[in-house]
Image (cartoon, rainbow, N blue to C red; front, side):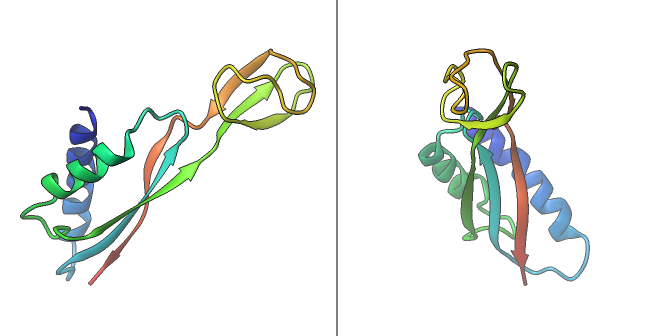
Length: 113
């Protein structure tokens, strides 16, 4: 379950941000998660509750924002949204696609008190 280690990385960032200044509590963390990131959201939510215990983010809401998969089509040279890595180009039907987005996961923002 790599979601636990993902949450541990997020906690390090949250602790770093919350430790610099007069922040007493983190109330919400919003994550952007790409379609191809390989993150199991229920497992991430479970890991979130476990890993954030004892931190300034304990009890904070975890909001996950879905990002689409993207690819460059070599035939029509368009950047297109795709649901699966092997989908054809929705514009021209070509199978010559190079994925160029959708595998990222990053903290978009945090609400703090």
